[in-house]
Amino acid sequence: MAKAGKTESKPPDAGPLPPVKSPVDKAALDTAFEALKTFDYGSARAALLPIDDAVALAAADPKARKDLEGRLAGALGTNLSKPAKGFLCRMLARIGSADCVVALAALLDDADLSVLARASLEQIPDAAAGKALRDRLPALQGMAKVGVIQSLGARRDAESAPALAALLNDADAHVAGAAAAALGEIGTPESAAALRTFLPRAPQAILPTAADAALVCADRLTAANRRDEARTLLETTARCTLPKHIAAAVQRRLAG
Image (tube, rainbow, N blue to C red; front, side, top):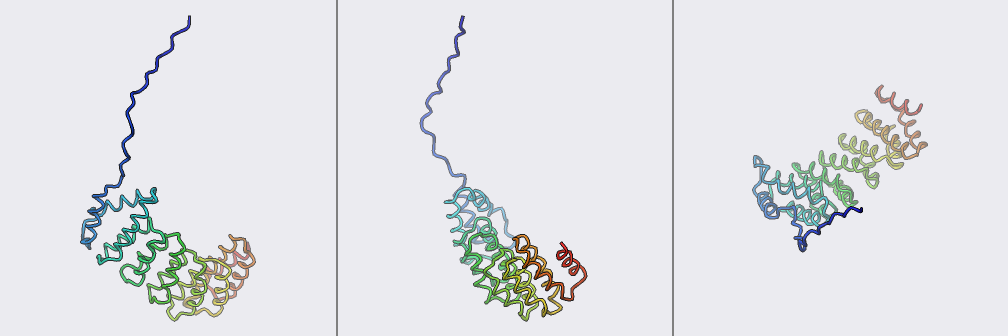
C-alpha cells in the first residue's frame, strides 16, 4: 500500500520586501564632517570614525564612492587644520580617483602635508595622478621635490624618465640620488640609457646610489625579457669604482 505523501504548506504571502536601508548612517556622517571643521592636534579621532566607516563601505558601491570622494576632496580645499587635511588625504588614498587629483596636487609643496598628498597620489591608479606629479616636479624644491621623485619611481611612471634623467645633474645630491633610484624602479630602456650615460661621470657621493639603481633597472629589464639591454647596463656599471658589495652583485648578474 502506497504511503501518503507529506503535505507541504505554502508560506503566507508576506507582501513586497521593504526597501534596503543604506548601511551608511548619513546623520552620523554629516556630524563627522562637521567635526572636521574643529578637528586639530589633540582632538579625539573617534569623532571622525563615521567617515572611516563610509570609506570602507563605499569600496563596494561605485556611486557612493564617487559621492564620498567628491565630498572629501571638496573639504580638502577648505580652511581646515593640517591634521584634518591629513586625515582627508589618507581617506582619499583608499577611494581616490582622477576626480580628487587636483585637490591632492595642490598640497605637494606644503611642508606638513606633501608626504600624505603624494602618498595618496601614488595609490590612485588613474594616469592623471602621475601627470599631476610630473607637472608639479619643476616647481618644487628640497625634500618636497625628492618626495615627488620617489612617488614617480613608486608608480614606475615611464613618462617621467626624461625629466628624471635631467635631474641626475641637479646640484642637490638628494635630488640627483632620488632621480637615479626612480629611474631604476621605472626600469625601461630609456631609464637604462639615462643611467648608462650618467654612471661613468657620477659624483662619488651619488655613485653607489646610481649603481644600486642600475641593478634594479637591469633586473626589471631582464624580467621584461630585454636581456641585452640589461647586460649592457651591467657592463657599464661594472667599469665604475664601486663598493665591494655592489661590485659583487653586478658580477653575479653578469655571470647568471
